[in-house]
Image 1 (cartoon, rainbow, N blue to C red):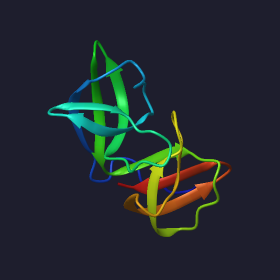
Image 2: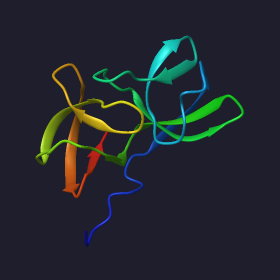
Image 3: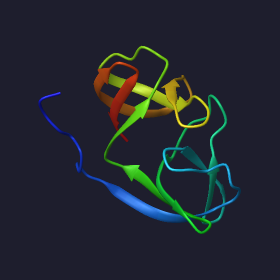
Image 4: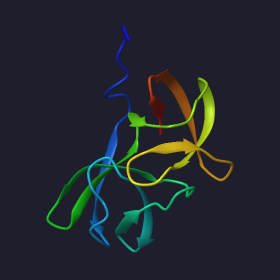
Length: 111
């Protein structure tokens, strides 16, 4: 890709982690007040853990992010859901995001 979307409108917030299944790159959801947990397959995401340390996760809630995917996306508006562990896919109940990059199992989108 000859252009770079990184840094656009990034917003990162620190949350406690409910359990140890959250690692860097995990799509997350709220589990209780001030706490996140990993999304199950097909669940809508609030963001992606961009750093995890000592029971806390820095979660990117907005801005451009690239994630692995096994699905074929098209550029434009898509509903993004977790595809388990550290991947995403399209799903009717997902967070509406603008997909701006698709290539070789990677999808780049604006949260």
